[in-house]
Image 1 (cartoon, rainbow, N blue to C red):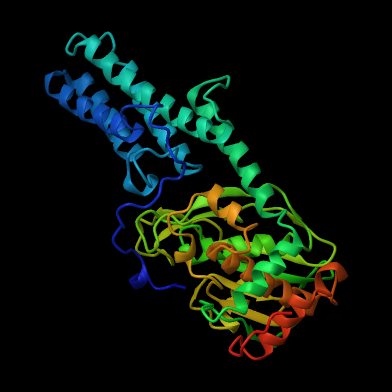
Image 2 (cartoon, rainbow, N blue to C red):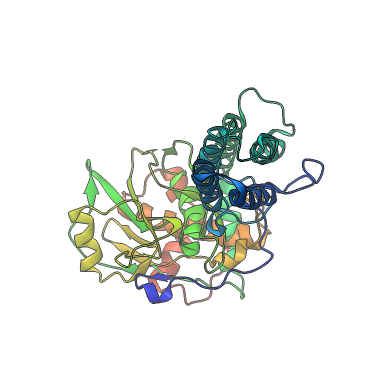
Length: 402
C-alpha cells in the first residue's frame, strides 16, 4: 500500500524489468531510446560551431530530446512507450525536429549534419511505431505518420486487453478463486474491513468509490481484480493500458487505468478517482510522488477523512466495506506484459490468475451484499457464498473448497 506521505515515495529503479511490448530484434538494430539519445548528443555537439541563432535552435532541440528520453517515460530502451508517456516522447521529439528545421539554411552549421540529426529522430519515431504495430497486429503495415501508427497500435491494444479482462467467464473466476483461498499459501496483501457510515449511493444504486493513482503498483494490481469483478455486474468502455511508475517500487507494473473510465450497471455505480499520473511530481506540495491528475470532490474528501485514509489504493463499497491496499501483491505480476497478465486471468492454475481472480471474487462478494444479491447468476454462486463467510472472519480461517 502506498502512504500519502512523500517519505514513502521513490525507491531505486530495479534493473531488468520487462519491456512494455516485447520487441522483435528484426525491427531495429539500435533501440529507439538510443537513437533519440544519439540525436540529442549530436545536436549538442553541433552547438559549438554555430552562430547565435543556430546555437539557440540546437540547444532547444537538445532540451526537447532530453525530455523525450527521461527515465520516467521508458521501462526499457526497446519499448513501444504507451500513452500518455508516448505522447510526451513524440511531442518533444517533433518539437526538436521543428527547431532543426529552422536552421537548415544557416551557413554556420552543416546542413548535412542537421539533416542527419533529423533523420535519427524520424527513424526513432518510426521504430517506436513499428515495434507497437508488430506486437499488436503482427506486422508494421498501417497508413499514416509514425505517431498515427503508434496511436493506432495502442488503441487496438487497449481494446484487446480491456475485452480480455472484462470477459473472463464467471466459472473460470470461481475456479481460480476457490483454488486461491483453499491454498495454504494464499496471503492477502489487504483485508476488507466492515464499516458503518451514511449510505453511499449514486442514482439509487450502491456506489463503489475507488481512490488511487496511476503511478502506484498496488493500485495497478488491484485494478485487474476490480475490472474482472465489476464486469460481472456491468460493462466498461475500453480501458486504457498503463504502467505504474518506472522509478518506484515494483517498477512498471502493467495495468489498466480508470481515468475517464465509463461503467454502466443496473446494480451498482462505480466512481473512480486516479489522483495522480505515473510521472514524477516536481512540486514540494504534491500529495503523492507523482503529478496530480484528478482531485476528489468535497464529498469524496469527506469519505477519505472519515475513515482516516492514509494510503492507496482505497476502496469504499457503499459504506459497508472499506479496503486500504490491494488484495494481491504486485509482485505476482512482476515482469509480465499486459497480454500475459490478461491471459492468466483465464488460467485458474496460474499464481497470478488465482491472486487476481481471487481478489475479484472478494469484491464480488462485497457487491452482492450491498446490491440485494443481484444478479442471481453471480451472487448465488457457492464459491461466492464461501467468500462472504470468509469475509466475516477476516479471511483468517481455513477456506474449504465448495
